[in-house]
Length: 123
Image 1 (cartoon, rainbow, N blue to C red):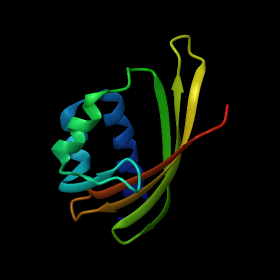
Image 2 (spheres, helix red, strand yellow):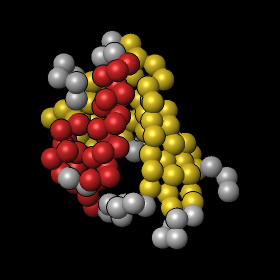
Image 3 (cartoon, rainbow, N blue to C red):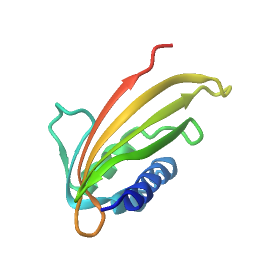
């Protein structure tokens, strides 16, 4: 992987999150991906499990913005940083999270291991 490939993957990640389309979510991840919302979690295993989880309680369309960028990449591993901003129905910011993703990719450019760290900004 290189920085531009990771950037494209991150853009596809946000697009899939916004669309809520199962096939878009699945396409991001390898068949046997290990996915953790927190570093201490037992991982979800498999792209269907990830898609099921994402679609269990989806964020309403237009309720958030997300921007992530590749911080570092070496071989099949990358670190991404960014922020997720959630808005109330009136458009005001309700909360902002700073995020760090640890990513590992397979030979097809799909994520095979995903671990997220996030922290809500003080208001």
